[in-house]
Length: 366
Image (tube, rainbow, N blue to C red; front, side, top):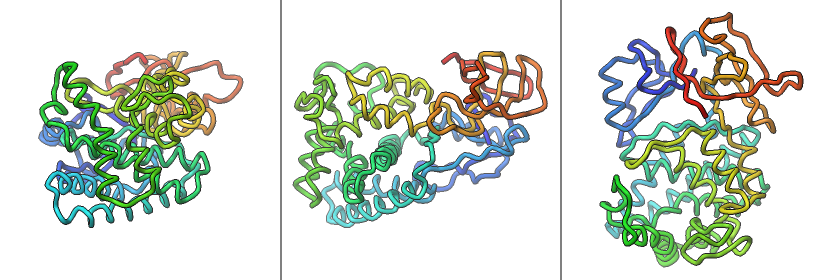
């Protein structure tokens, strides 16, 4: 399968991954032929692209780091927990227990796939951004925790802190959270309160380890001391705070928001790498970039020698040099073959991302 932006979807293409609606219901199942009216529905929900199955990519499989059913169940549970928290409902304690149980399942899935490089082109429903984002940040944080060989209890506390890192936003006015334009100084100061508000809420209402509370509090602290709410610096920031700072920013950068379009995974990775030692712990940045694919499997790419292909497999420890299924030489289609960019005799690099169609190619320089 391969990833195709909605603007390049053609009627009759076959859906490669199941899509879900705003309530977590199945919208379109994998294997469904795509119709124009389906594309309009996807656009309204905020999808910007989908995976398709076709002859060009029939032997390329995108492996999920956690089970898709588990992911959707967690998204719905986080949404329910935040809703009940807003209403101060008695059912919120039960919802918190559900979250605790799901964290264990996520850790199990990730631990069973600990050698898997995360191929994240996320398919989000725009209205549910906060809930999708919370789950993505938790998955990415646990992936880092596993790579750091954290003990099981710490993985659990990290998973909980990262899943609930934005819980304080339930106390932020919706008109500020969803504002499409630039925030005023006063509005930004209100947004900044969510870290402290989330810490206070979880600590007062729910019993868990102090590491979880502090991870929620410190996820906007920055390694150079420019973060909030306390302006902590370097290793004075908790390990959980330093981990979530990276995963939170990466997923936010690569997601479409009301005020801007998300960047490519490779651009998000470049930002994280460039901020190592200033905004982020440089040692943790090294761990992060070793586990997250800047060019996810299924991405169409342009090579420095004019060839165009689809990323077929990522090479562990060679994250910028994946295996690519070559399908075009400049404007001419060729008999598909695999090129492994990590081979020492190849002086070839990825220079851009390509949207490959039967009749045309559109390049977006990275």
